[in-house]
Amino acid sequence: MAEALPSKHRPEMVVDRNLALELVRVTEAAALAASRWIGRGDKNAADGAAVEAMRKAFDTVAITGTVVIGEGEMDEAPMLYIGEKVGLYARAGGGPEVDIAVDPLEGTSITAKGGPNAIATVALAEKGGFLHAPDIYMDKIAVGPGLPDGVVNLDATPEENLRELAKAKKCSISDLMVCTLDRDRHKEMIKACRAVGARITLIGDGDVAGVINVSQRDAGIDIYMGSGGAPEGVLAAAALRCIGGQMQGRLMFENDEQVARAATMGVDDPSRIYTVEDMARGDVMFAATGVTSGAMLRGVRRFAGGAYTHSIVMRSKSGTVRYVEGHHNFDRKPSAFVA
Image 1 (cartoon, helix red, strand yellow):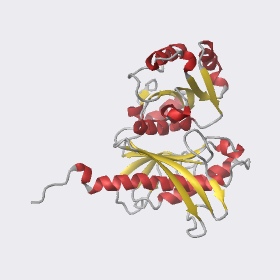
Image 2 (cartoon, rainbow, N blue to C red):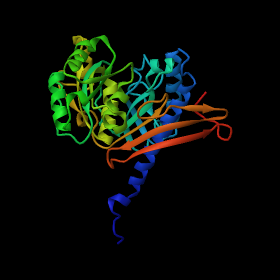
Image 3 (spheres, rainbow, N blue to C red):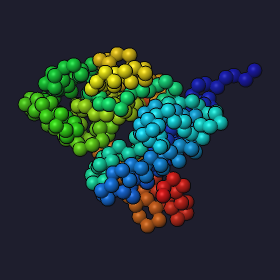
Image 4 (cartoon, helix red, strand yellow):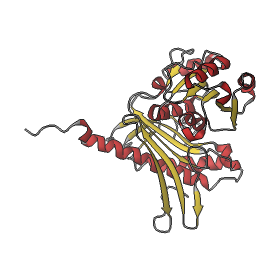
């Protein structure tokens, strides 16, 4: 009897690796479609183009996927709605059954204004691997890899978290850079950070990229604080599962109706603090393509007959992170996904 192949040589591992790279094609399609709308002042058109292109691209990926983080409920979103089946085998069945989290264009307003850090992003997990986060706010805090567990805590004050982080990094608080969304709801938090000497980077949109930047050495971000979309929190957690880092998130409910709806999605404790592992469990893959340039990715660069794209793809199983530069020749191979 032939000896069984070691796990690292089994065919399914090759499929996994190929699938991770196929996700890049999906985010590339969305980024290319959205890039036509950079700086044109129409965020809805940019988002719609990205959604349509990403949906079509998923039809070529050999999975049976279920969208668990998407563009909204079925009656709100014609494509990539929560519960939608996507993938080459979505109708006939076959291929791995996976859960999918998407944000075809994170930074719609950024794209409309031609600002930095807009990305197209998708994450994939084993079935049941993602927190089914309702479309509400989530309070978040995140730091990069290589730090003691629990170095920051969502229940601590900004001053306490910055003091502990500075101690762990063996630096002064004035060396730390805090990233947060530029929102009125963060005024007191920003004031508290500045009072103890921390520096602040305010972003107008795009807190998936904001959270991921804590794990990017070149980004110069030490900690992310503040509230943003809960679905974006799950996407960011998926990236940190792959690339490293700590994150905590707590859903922010405005009324009993939201609490009741979240319960139908599996949220049994409204006050629970979720970790990275709580939000993205099992084998996770993450991919993103830059739409406009930022600290992590360069944006789409269009030219006559083609475009350049810059993407990142990573897997939690291997910890591998790859950057992919795509040179797209539309004269030789017209894009099937971009109008």
